[in-house]
Amino acid sequence: LQGKRTLLIDHSHQLGHVGLLLGIEESSYHFDDLIRNADRLDSELLGGFVVRHASGLAVLSSPSTCTVRQRALPEDVERIFAFLRQEYDFVVLDSSLHYDDAAATIQYSDSVYLVSTPDIASLRDLSRYIEHLGLTETSAGKLHVAINRASSHDAIHQEQIEKVVRFPVSVSIPNNYAELLSAVNAGAPIWPQRRSATAGQQIRWARVSASW
Image 1 (spheres, rainbow, N blue to C red):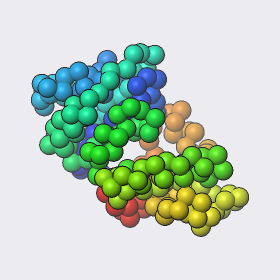
Image 2 (cartoon, one colour; image 1 turned 180 degrees about the vertical axis):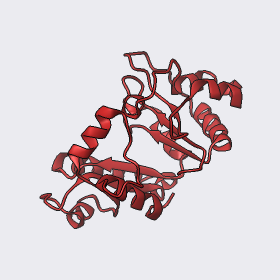
Image 3 (cartoon, one colour; image 1 turned 45 degrees about the vertical axis):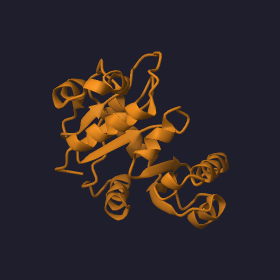
């Protein structure tokens, strides 16, 4: 996404990690502020909400404290997404299917990536989510599966995962715990251009190969 206007939203309603992992300063503004101001959003107001990463990425972080969430009406979510589409080339929402506004979020998204790890409990839950979301025509064609921390030593391989969840795996992120832990603690993302970065190479492949 280099050279593209990109917004990353931490949709956690409290204690999110996106800002922390990117090493950016804490912000007083979050996605809930978009909800509260859905009827008067403009470029200037949005610019006061987001924080810029050194890479040029715009970030809307989540509260770093325990807070009461702002409930969103479907029409507010629609209005916000329509506005963000005008402001950015890509909007990436790090969210959860447990939230009340998940259905509206999926409805107004172009692609939905379900991220899981290759263990039996996570795959059981992934299978249930796919069954649920696949029942709606608006979401079935948007779904993609991403397997995080994949390894050739896993007891469950990709072919078995696809058989269990009855859905193809679009992306497998290799397990490189030491590299990722170092990046997390340093607040420095793994750049896809780094040839020594195994995870970075796979992310670059995913970026090119996946359907956006």
